[in-house]
Length: 179
Image 1 (cartoon, one colour):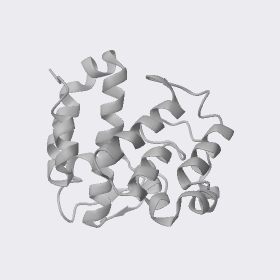
Image 2 (cartoon, rainbow, N blue to C red; image 1 turned 90 degrees about the horizontal axis):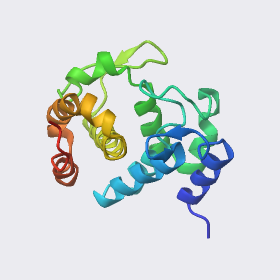
Image 3 (cartoon, rainbow, N blue to C red; image 1 turned 180 degrees about the horizontal axis):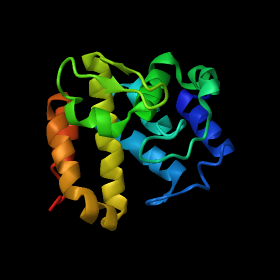
């Protein structure tokens, strides 16, 4: 029996994620590690799938998109609407505008695709924080230069996101030497 993870990995491979260079090897290897890290934190299946697929539409920090936004329904059909909505939310984040206050209840979130702002619910902000931590921790694990250049800022970001992070995620954030 094929699973959503297997279907997503197949689509990622078909779209070339296994050939896109990324710290620690390829984009596909990174995406798998992010999903595995989320699983280790006991994230629910939809968030794990979002971790595996978080780069489908590109991100504010990684512009390579594997799938255009007009094909969102295709990803929904593979990973489900809940996981795809997390993927879109993560990809749409204008980090400069949204990161500083994302942990604050009622703070605006700026969508870089539409240019609009809205106020996401706490659950979606928690998912975003968990996915962000898993993604950035993987980068730090596999790119010493990245860690040296951004470690202090990462720790500040994780500290701001602390109210949204699960205990396992927060403990993982504390394992890296950010100094």
